[in-house]
Length: 104
Image (cartoon, rainbow, N blue to C red; front, side, top):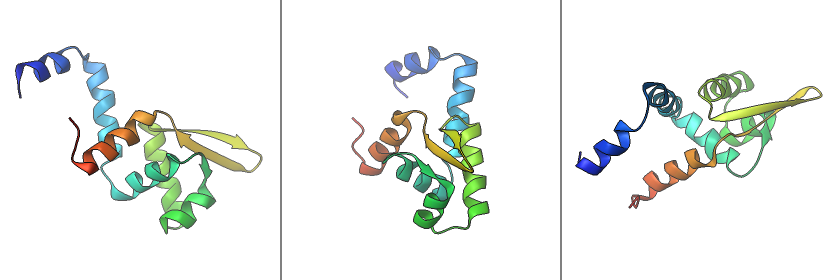
């Protein structure tokens, strides 16, 4: 790690580092990354995500709970459905940057 990177990390409080670690842990599962990628296109309910991800409702709901607990997504209940959306666009931007291999 170069001196510049050490300085950037040193500016984060322990609480900040803990929150960032929780986000990376939540995104550490391929299905949760796929869910976040779909939510980058706009909010969706569990049923919509189930069709796109190819998992059953309980599995998608479980993954959404992990993402919500980590602060990656937020939700809003409308009638009987709950709609999810990305809380911070930077999460998916960082994932796409890493996937492209050009994060300069």
